[in-house]
Amino acid sequence: MHGPLILLYNSIRKKKMYTIRKQFKFEASHQLMDHDGKCARLHGHSWVMWVEVRGDSLFTDGPKRNMLMDYADLKIAVKPLVSEFLDHHHLNDTLSVDMPTSEYIAEWAYDKLFAIGVPIFAIEIEETCTSMCRFEPESSDPGIAFVEHGGTLEQFNNEMEKMRQMYRQTKGSE
Image 1 (cartoon, one colour):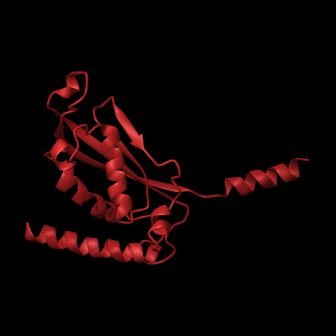
Image 2: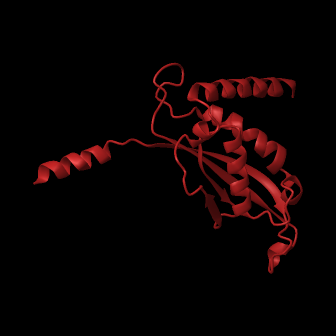
Image 3: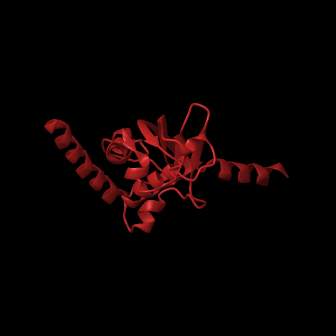
């Protein structure tokens, strides 16, 4: 009787899932205009954003062999969002919203990264050292960004290489 149960357990257990997370920090102010507490006043935080990518397969060859995604590629995708919209900005202005809560910021970042093809699984925003939120869509399927955008892993890697080159050019001109 144990034979079929062990086989079932082993077949379930063999499904692999990999998750990588990268942390991004930024300083920003915001004001929750309609809030009924002290957050209605202008104030700022030292925010922490965790970007999570999940997938069931790794690269099988090339310089990214045995990686789900290169952390450097993830940084290249996320850094422009942090620089242009979050770090040392007033979030009400850069996100064009009167209630830039941590929940709103998490979903906003998810949508932005998803739109450029990052195989994003979740975003966590730490507003303070004791308060944070996590956004992940109800149907967070690994690699969904590729499927919904009609792309492939190879196309994504090509786009990431273009972003890497742009990033290097930007860093060289500073």
